[in-house]
Length: 417
Ligand code: NDP
Image (cartoon, rainbow, N blue to C red):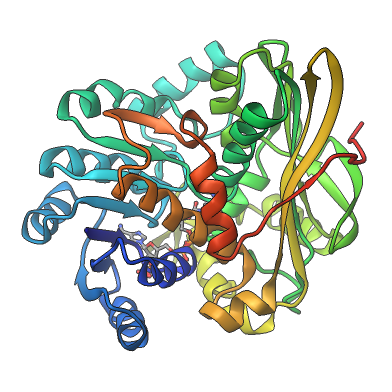
């Protein structure tokens, strides 16, 4: 099966490593903006795999650049591990060239000052009640196009969204008649030794974390100020951590796909140093996305900041500690209330030894490969646009155990108040 991977950053590096271990992928083309990164990765992996590896330069913001590449390589499936800004262009190119589409993050506009985008955004804020710059409406609008083309688009197969959504489908299938409460917990107990760095793309990470939080309750969104809701939790493998309520994209799809759910929240852990730096950068305008004039040049503050911060892909050798990510579910089974926590613990240094990347890239890249394999093998099939929780979770859960992200079910978890 021919796979085209777009992007060659931290997540892509792990996803491609893992694709090379899965015999379903016989030919893999690694394409990105900076071709030298693709060449270096292909050279490193070629001796360890039976898959034929090729590389290409592509501008994923350009429909023409994408279709030229797709028409010559003719992929069965395209894995988009570039940035959320490119989701729609890549989906359009897949439709034009007859390829299935897979990604790990929903569409986000790069230029949030674009008047047409703003109009749609403000209408959505009013109608839905949350103000995040990203939401599923843009990609769900492609359902009919993919259905008519007989192609599959699988959205959000990273860890969160991705594995957390598959955990939900698994809990629904095996542990509950009705799930009422879902708390998604994302704990990174890793230490990279820098005063401040982000574990994945800084622009995407800082925009997400500095935005208002929100959660789903009784059929509507409740919005909070950034970092307004804080809890402490004692994570297996990590210990006690502060965690904060954020808006997160899988809340939107789980609210649509899990019947009877009353509340869905998402919490992420942050250390005080991270928060102090982020607040300071925000207060001085360094997280801005609107270009500013500086000594005759136009500079987008957050892009300039990205150039100064450590490259997330370079954190691997320095990061020690573990991640613990999972979901606490509370609901009803056979008339009785029960709660379970399904989670994975991942060690930064073990990930680095295996793939050269730290656990945040690893925990996203492994499920990116698994979701792609589900589509490529036809294990998950159907024409249209789907979120991962819409399919049978069992083969995906088996693959998590096989490819490096084993999971645990705790049937007596401490709950989050
Ligand atoms: P990186 O910034 O490390 O990598 C992004 C890659 O995309 C780079 O290789 C970059 O090229 C390439 N790229 C960017 N713009 C273009 C373009 N216009 N054309 C072609 N290639 C382009 O990001 P990460 O690997 O950390 O993240 C990748 C994706 O994974 C993001 O969408 C992120 O949101 C998502 N993610 C999802 C998570 C989940 O759990 N669901 C968790 C973490 C991340 P260059 O090398 O030239 O910069």
